[in-house]
Amino acid sequence: MPLIVVSVTELDFGKLMGSASGGTVNLTDGGVRTTSGGVTGVDLDYFAVEIEIMGTPNAKYVFDEPRKVPLAHPTGGASIEIRAVDCNPNKRGTLDTTGRATIRCGGALVVPASPLAGLYASTVFIDFDYK
Image (cartoon, rainbow, N blue to C red; front, top):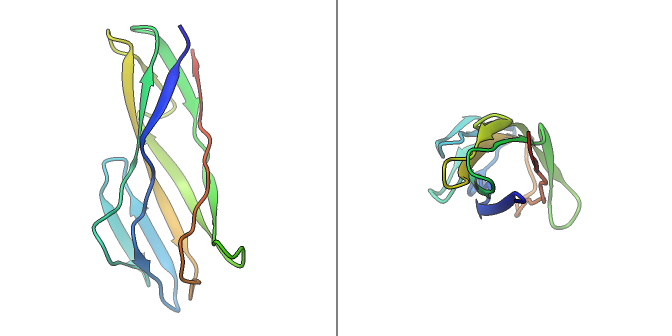
């Protein structure tokens, strides 16, 4: 039976306000957001990634998430980076007796000093396979 992978929610750090000093936004796989340095969260709409996997019951699976993800500004004139993508479980797991598993991922967003305002986005590919 093939693995079926469905993205339930996408990684979204929410609306942020940068400063002249830059900073970091951490979003845990459990959906808890914290900021440090000169970055402030200005809304409550942020989400960790949630991925649903379906396949052969009780089968072991592996996956590989990227460690760094560049996010581009729509004008192409600026970018920021997600570093330290972190998933739970980490890189491997076992489907339950119904052939399902849920993976949640967060990460650390590094915001440069005086960032260009706008929506930064990227497409991220995560490879899944049976072990």
